[in-house]
Length: 340
Image (tube, rainbow, N blue to C red; front, side):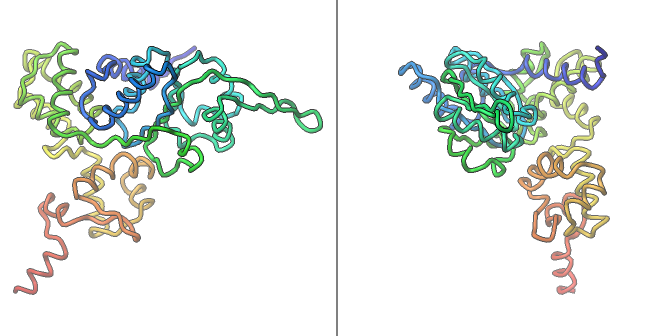
């Protein structure tokens, strides 16, 4: 079977992530409240010799939802079987997955909000009563077969919790939101990852990388990967603040963490649409990116940092955005004209 270059790239990226992924709560940095709640739930379940309650993890991409699922499996001493919402097309796919479990196992479903509604309904009885009813044949010969399931834990992960139906959401006993990471936590993550990658780094170098990682460990590790290449070729395999700054400047990632696409989005709104408002669809066509990607990947950071605002009429550049690009915002311009 032919392996496409994109598949090879995804495999290499997955391998890279797995090398850096912590396997124990003790090694997991950040998300203190979420970690404490999960540790307590694990300890209680182990004392009762029961399976862990179902867990829902939601938040922006790259904050550790998959990592926490595997840490839960390690802490409980059970297997973790992974899949994603779009992959489960038919109830039979779900039945095959659930019936292959051993008692206490964890099923991790990524992007659970994208699961088909017809499949999702079969999850209700599986999560609550640990049974699943499958219809066999059609028409007059149709009959329902009930399959008993071992007690298992469903860990669902989503970047858009609002799209999860109320019946499914209510069946999760532990619901946790993951937030963007503080700079100090990201710095510790970069230092730990650098040790695993066998590259020298000082605190200032790690902090420089962390400051441009948009509060996201996955981005921090990806930036470290690129800075490592630069340090290996041009800096004797040691990362300082200067080395990190030179490498990240080469990648066109500015000191505030804005990358090439972020800048393109903001400049498009400022120059092509006079600061907005501009609709998501129009903005998507203008920058050549899918609307979902803009909404889920780029906009949360731009909004959090105060560069962009969502309004009923569309996206609008904020005064801070004007300042960032050396422009005068309309409100400030009106003040200047009034003073004049």
